[in-house]
Structure formats: structure tokens, C-alpha cells
Length: 174
Image (cartoon, rainbow, N blue to C red; front, side, top):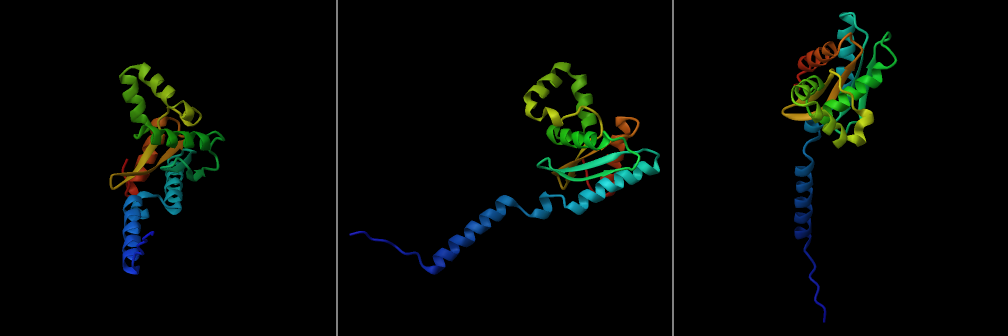
């Protein structure tokens, strides 16, 4: 004779509540882990506006942590290559987990072979990587939410400065 035990309704409900609570702990609150489309668009727009006031024609791209583009804004006079360059700079900043300007400086101060090793280790991403200043992670409360890339100013150090200025103004760090 096979004996089966039927859980009571209260036991079943408790198990469901525990499971849902566990899922909530694993995923965390959405507001703490993701950039909104509005924030991404505002970041990119403010970079382009600031650059235009300074006389530069740039594009800015914001990526989420999954490396998907959330927003790209291009100055009317920016070169046709700038949207792709800004995407690659943001992508690279996410991969290296620091501003691209710092990564380049630190790598070149060490050994050039380190850069080659990095590229080989990330060969599947090589079409999306670019080793130019102007890519900066977007951090809030110690969590990386994405990255912004800027391309088109007459020097990568200017792209980098534009991104950092706007991030700071909007309450983000890098």
C-alpha cells in the first residue's frame, strides 16, 4: 500500500512565499541594478549638448550591463564613424571595468604584451573593443549599471572629460 501525504494549504502557501522571497533576494530591486531608458537618453543627450557648447561634434552611446545599447545621440555635424566609436568605447569600458583612458595608461605602463594577452582572452569581443579614451563605466552606489562612450572630440582625453563631467552632474560615479 502506497501512502501519500498531502500538504495542507498553509504549508503550500508558506513554501510559495519562501520561494518568492528567495527569488526577490537573488534578483534584487530593479531600481538598484538597471539604468532606465530615460536616464540613458538623458546622459547621452547631455554629453552631446555639453560638447556642442564647447565646439565639439560628438556622438554618445550608453550601454546597459549586458552590453546592449540603451541610447545613442549624435550631434548633427558629428562624423559618420562617431556612433560606432562611442559604442565601442562604452563596450570596452564594461569589459575592462574601468575608464578606457585608465586602462590604456595602466596597460602601456606595464608591458605591451599584457594588452595582447587581454585581446586574445577577449577575442570573441574583438569586433566591439577599441583602445581609445572616452569609455567610462556608469556606477551608482558601488554597482556598475552600464557604460557611456563618447567619440568625436578632437582628442580622446576630451571625450573622456565630457563623459565624466556629465556622469558627475547626474549623480553617478565611475
